[in-house]
Length: 416
Image 1 (cartoon, helix red, strand yellow):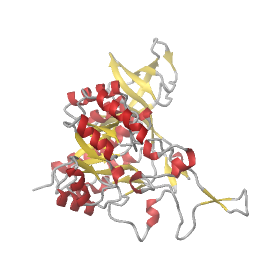
Image 2 (tube, helix red, strand yellow):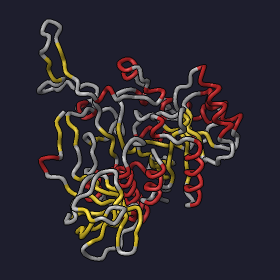
Image 3 (cartoon, rainbow, N blue to C red):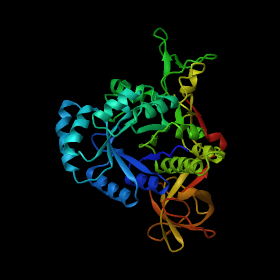
Image 4 (spheres, rainbow, N blue to C red):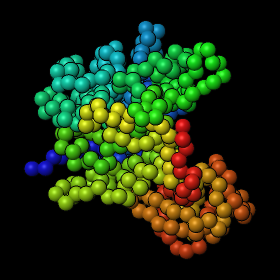
C-alpha cells in the first residue's frame, strides 16, 4: 500500500496571494493574524480580511490556518484575549501557536478550533510531539533541523499528525529563534519583525586596520557565516511522502504572487505525478527550471539528510540567484478580446512574453496593443498600473495567470 499524499500548504501574505495559491493547486493556505504573527503586519490579515479569506477558502473546499505564533509578552495578553473574542465567529481551520499562553487561551476561547504547534517551539522528537498532543494540539510542525528519517520516526512513534517544511528560506538560528535582528536593529524576530540581519553583506574588519574590510570567506576550506541557502526538496518527493508527514509546508509569506504561483504549481505537479504512479515517478527537469526562475539563494536540502559534516559549506550562501525570469504582469480578468493586467515590470506593446497559469498551463504570446484604463494607447506599461492588453493571436489565458520574460543569462546571478 502506498503512502498517502500529504497536504500541500502554501503561504499567503495577502488576499491576492491567497487567491493565487488556491488557483495553482494548494490544498491549504496559512496566513498571519495581524499583531500576533511571525511576519510584519503588512503580510498579515486584519480581522476584516481574515473573514473574507476564510469564506473564500471554504467556498473552494480548502483549509486555512492562522498563525498566532509570535512571542507574547505580559502586556500582550489583553490584546490576545481581545483578538480571540473579536474573531470568535470566524471559522478558521486551525490556529498555529508558539506560546503556551496562546495555546491555553485558544482552548478557552475557541475549543472547537484545531491547534497546530509552531516550528518556533523546536519539536524534534516523538515524546515532545505527544506532550503537545496531550496539551491539546492536533498537529505539530517540526523543527527544520529534523532529518527525514527523524520525521518518519516521530510520525510513526507519536501518532501525531506532523507538518514539515519542504521549500523556502532557512534560518541560521534553531527554528528561527534568533536575537541578531533584535540586537542590531531593535526589531525582534520572535515578534514578527525580523530585519534579516543575517543576510546583510557582511565583511571582516581587523581592529588595527580600520577601513580595510575583508569578505567573510576563505579559499580551500571556506569560512562562510550567517547567510543560509534556501531549502528545496523537489528532487526528493518520494522520500518526503514516505516520511508519513501529513502536511508539506512552503515558506514565504513575504514573497510575491509569482513566487506563490511557481512553487505551488511545481510541488502540486510533483505530488500529483507521484500519486498517479509512484513506481514510475521521476523528477521532471522542468520543475527545477521553474524553481530557478525565482529569485533565491542557492538551493540545498538543509538538514533533511543529516548535518553535512563533510561539506558544511553547503548550508551557507555565497551568492544570490536573482532568477531566470521577471514577472511583468498578473491577469486580473478578461474584457471581450482584451486582458486586464496588473503591471509588475514594464513591457512594450510588441513584447514576446511567456505566460504560466493554473493547472500547469502556459505558452508564449506577443503583445499586440496596450491601453490604459481610460482607453488611451500606450507604447509601454508602468509598474503598479492596470492596463488592457490585446494579443497578436488568440489564446485562452485564465485569471491569475502570470506574464513573464526571460532575463539575459549574464543578469541571473549576483555575487554576495
